[in-house]
Image 1: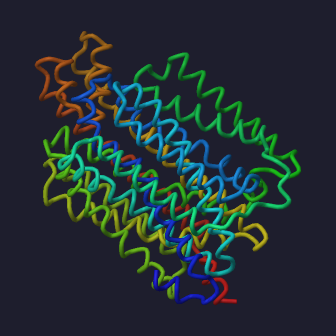
Image 2: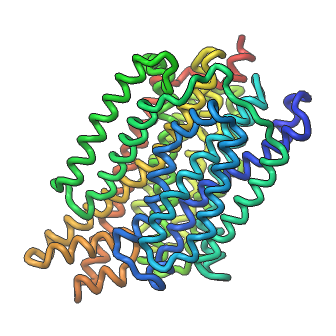
Image 3: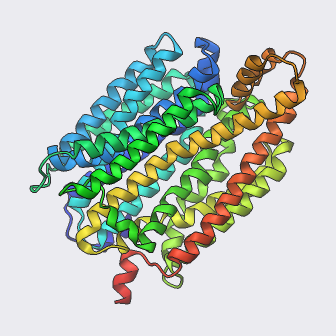
Length: 510
């Protein structure tokens, strides 16, 4: 924060209060990714629910939050950035207060869909308001700080949720989050100034609807596949309709006078590289934040607080490494540092896969910390690169696309990783049990993928050892697939962004 304050004397005290409100939103929103992953066992024990219903406690928020982000960004330009920010926080807080009152898991699922819409509006309002309040080079540092706080919310969510579960019960995970939302609402009301795009002619409704529906249906199809199977008419239909809608979105954006997404930017190699980099934390970091607590609680027998503490080595580097990356960028390009970071993530993922079979213990500290260090390098740099690869006049559009990709990738990554884990468990169990009831095996695999080993074991009675061995092998293969993907992404970043600098570095070089 002091770095940002020292950078300019232009912004007023009210502006810095607005930045604080945005950072509070940046911490608040990702808590809803990670907190419910820790409380699922407690919700299941009290309210019951099928594996699919419990899965949607996490996935419901992810689905609407990622899908609605781009449309929410356009609404801020039309109806006012402060107004959308306040409406989003209000919806988010009200729904979050209601969630602990839900009598059944299916009610929580529905409320989480609404919560995601509120979160998308709030974060889009915060981003667009900051872009107007902090123009010029300081904007890079402000967005970098906001990105870091977003990462802190993701990383330390399991620890905070675990502590609340142990001390007060699972309902307080949502109640505390709602209270933070109320505090954020007050800060925004007092500090933010209203602004909108004077040239806005209205929302590109065909583009907004086609893009949001395409992303939602794609994510829904992937999430549904472990339960229904890839040959299911519902799964195939969702994916096909998503593909058709996405093609329609591309055609719409090429024809409208003021497109929601300027597709011509994707003709630039560096711009594409920045979008690949934006999606990388979702697949190689956020998936671990969501999946590992379930394993630690359900498989390794840790309590919620202990599971949160096990995540500290993964999370702690984000407090330091992004700022260290900014210092290192004086001697190395941001693209080069980002590629090196992804290679460190690759090594860390393979290392975790090797030692995870020994259970949650000291052997995991070093590899988890290595992953945290690796992802921390690009985390503090990619916001600056997002605005350095386009002309100044197109910075707003580039920032919107970058954040949409980063947020949308979270939902897709968690859906893909969860589906892969469930399918690998299903394949192992069906191959070993042969004539067993396929429906029971699929339900057991979905339960195990959530970390609910007790319920999974009851569905395949007498096969606990097989279930444990199958789960462990499947989890390791997921880590190895992620490691291979991280290595490939690192090579792409080196090729596309090896010489890319942040906005401030480019100015200094000029």
